[in-house]
Length: 84
Image (cartoon, rainbow, N blue to C red; front, top):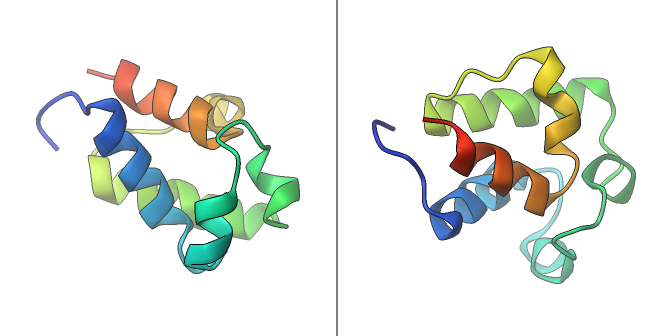
């Protein structure tokens, strides 16, 4: 994407990237501040796949040092909307 994402766009991208790891019903009830990895039982490979999906959808480079910023839906949205 060539523009900065809005919070709504970033939220949609995160939820879309999480599909396959959780059902739509689970994603709908997932609290925005709940930690993603333990809540959705994401192992290391699942988390890397999630990061790759975010990168493909946004064009944002996500380094390993950024991973702690992807702990919850809210923190992912904050990260994605802060990147220019």
